[in-house]
Length: 495
Image 1: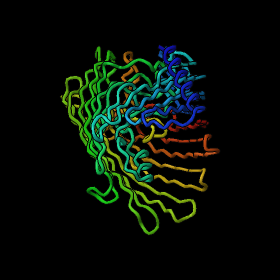
Image 2: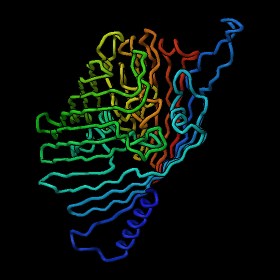
Image 3: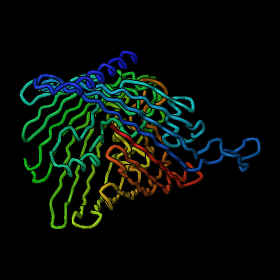
Image 4: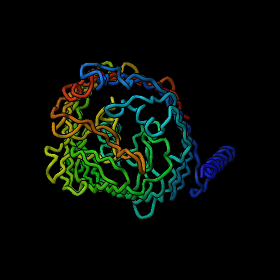
């Protein structure tokens, strides 16, 4: 399969080169072929919460032993992507081949749970190095199946919340930052990423856009073997978006519905029951709506985000009833130097208050792009209360600075602390979301984050991030230390 894909890419590149050397075609049906290359190299460094020391039973309860795990490590990841895109008036084809490498993954950064992203990569690879060549995307789109309708099939990306374009650049940026992938997404920040095999139909009209899709995710996210399709997970997704000014001035509105069904042979059950099983048994339907708006003011632009979702279904034989709400406001002072943009928001994702009843109340994120909403990558938006402020500055056209401050609490002290970004593998010991016990506490911690994006050239950028978390009562019940630090530097080259 890899040889065939390489041959396909080589053939497309040869066509592109030949086309570039030939006179411009005047036939509108002649495909236009382009190629793209992207290389991402990232160094990640973790200093996780210090683990509690082990104790020797032979020497008595007060005799401490050195920790068996190491929460401090640094590793390197690299992702090389080659894409070929062919487009005509009626058809469009996309092929993307990806090669990833990981070095110096930590072999002992565990207990309780995995200590950061490097530990998750190690769990999947079971060694300190990993590498993989795989078809990232391979799809065909019929662009004019019916009037205003397109149909895409194959291996593709899908992100909930951004199925339609509003045509307003500042609103699109806001949607990408605060709506993209809350429930379904490719988790593009991870070295491996995730794709979806299936079919998608889009109807695009002047005032509205509708999307319907049926998909199965690929392995990926932290699992380096990203070629296989997870056939035991099926996802149906649909949305209708109303463009700005249709109902509310300066606002895009969306209604959405998703169905997630999971029957993978995994024993881990991520909830507060402490039970295990032979396989997953989850069927969850989510219905919700969102509003995203950019409003002109005398000093610049105000913005708002409202996102609500309710869930029902079946969770390992129990009734699933859960919900989540997010509300955010902000203002960008476009007339001032550095264009400061100040935002604040609140999120609530329900938890399960009673592990002994027949009702499961933890909001289930399905297959999200987790790091957009938790940059320090230590918690999922499940059983969570998140109160935050964030600020952006643009000192130069090529430099963007960002800082975030979060106060994180669990919605229920009877439910665990959840982390992860959804299913990564077809089978094994991991569900995709992991848990740590809360011991009846709700205070998870305070998170301070800062990042800088520097565009050195139109084809070259460097990004840096540092985040620290001061753990609350939940953390102090599990760890000896209550301070976590995560940092990375990333180099991106694209052609």
